[in-house]
Length: 138
Image (tube, rainbow, N blue to C red; front, side):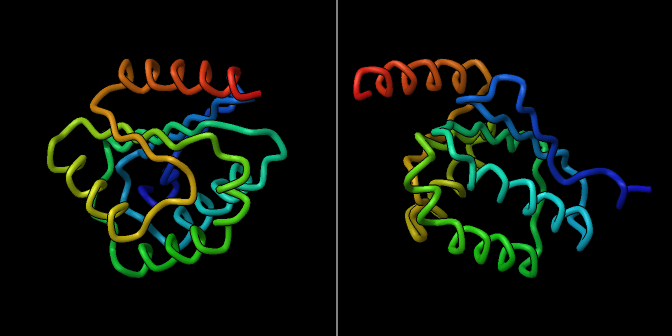
């Protein structure tokens, strides 16, 4: 039954410009992780500029096989993400999660600006700041 639970839940109710993704905490499988990356690719190829919020509150260990798949997805969509993503905001409530994410992005920079925050409230505040900046530039 667990393999039928999606790896991530996508919310487009505020798109454009906001796309929210909540990781469910379910164990990655070939089926659910492939579906997750396919949906992430839809985001990366949006014609409109966007901000993504990725809630990693329930995230668990991701086996190497799936980290490699994610790395290939990121590389494949790097150019479009750099052009269309205003930013990616990661919600990581624990110090360890935030530290790991910061280390990952230090080693392998993301194609758009990344902000790592501790809560949904912090994420919303950052989104508002980013949208104000985006309007000033436009």
